[in-house]
Length: 140
Image (tube, rainbow, N blue to C red; front, side, top):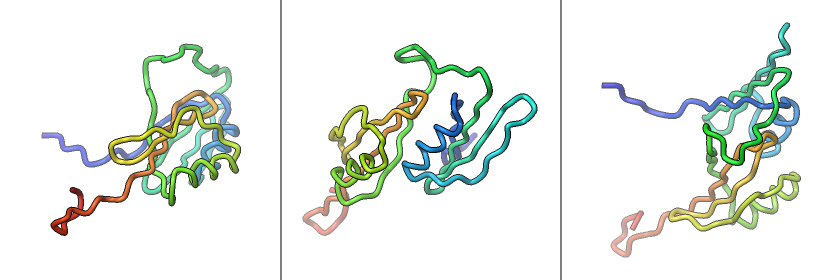
């Protein structure tokens, strides 16, 4: 039986490679490599956060989707480190990144949503610390 073990990477098509790279680098991604443009004008880049990668692809003539909720990727989520969601919000404001929604409480922390330059929703989650069980075990 097939046994998946992890999500290796996500691939996104972007309309403006430079604008998308600036956005994701402002979030804290590291640029691993970039190629192009090739003879057809196609560019690609691999960016990384933690052990996960996002592959970006662009080519001439791409236009953003005008549909409010097109079929395809709804969003992807990133876990953030920080003392509080206020710290995360302040970091985003300093980077010039607009928050589209939130912060909103989640069962395991707090989340907020951004839109990348092409409208892809990016969820940032700040996990709550584990709650100690009165009997001395974590995760109660």
